[in-house]
Image (tube, rainbow, N blue to C red):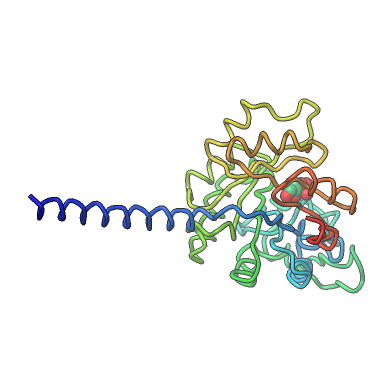
Length: 279
Ligand code: G3P
Ligand code: CA
């Protein structure tokens, strides 16, 4: 009888150790929450270098941002390219829609001179180039831009991550987001291991509990226009187990306001405006 009790006790202890380590692994894999507010360079450090170019991403890295954001679209011949507008006119010396130009045609464009002569010759990067260059160096927030123009773009983004073994739970080294919430859901169903966020454009109606409940069913982040943020909204977002990285900070006062409201990250053109000493 005494021997039986010892065996039961031993089995129980073994099970506890096993379950305990499983919980720890799960916590590590899902990315533990930290008190640090993430400093996220918007389109790279786009206050200092032309947005969505390697120069802007390098600037973000050099400024020690925690993460940079980029916008991904698709060329006529199906390459994933990093550019914000659906037309190339504003940020290059070319004209026309991204979706009507081949990758080779996009490569001929100068994506730096519009910002400053100093950046003449910067190119529109491929998503794959950016992932290859910055993987393991800095976290990346990928926005799928205007996905309704690019059927299948979610699968292509997933393929680019999978090909580089960046599709596993990754402590939020990669986050994928979009204003198109169906696209976010679609991406999540393809690669459930990669955390996703929903972008929310400004609305004076705010964000309802019902919306937060819906978002929490598939997303980890709800990222609204900064004008919607106050501490009450941040608390409600947290109550649903979500985190928030509002956009886009272009002055120090706004950065401090968001820090005071308790946000989890700040998307900014100026990474130096998010002062870690004031957190
Ligand atoms: O990451 C958020 C922010 O990039 C969303 O707005 O227009 O700059 O892509 P937009
Ligand atoms: Ca963006």
